[in-house]
Length: 108
Image 1: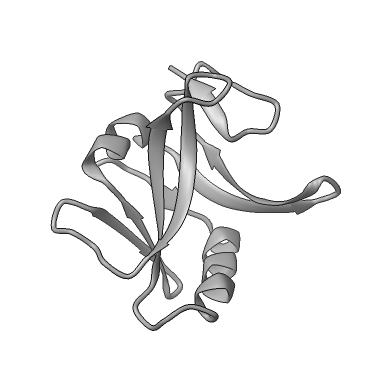
Image 2: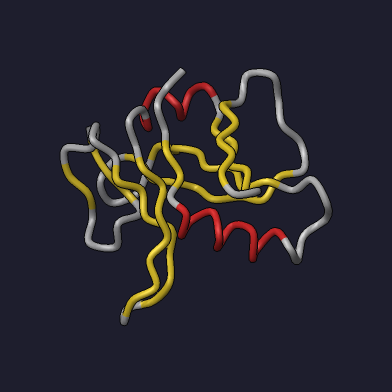
């Protein structure tokens, strides 16, 4: 299994979001082809998890990552930033060789 970590800030924000969703909902993070740097992250709310999903749990928050995305996210840290330019989930991915200015796409 890939070592993907979730910070306490990210877990807190996920819990806030999920409090407005049906019970059993989780945040799914996936990697898709595209974006200005080659790959982009997608964030979706899911009620269904598969046996193949990596399940990351921290402080009551649950994140799901599909098997293909795990290959691109190994060693990553999922965080949440609330700064002057806005709020967003940030993924510190040690496999990424570059990323775009907005931080939502990356290249390997």
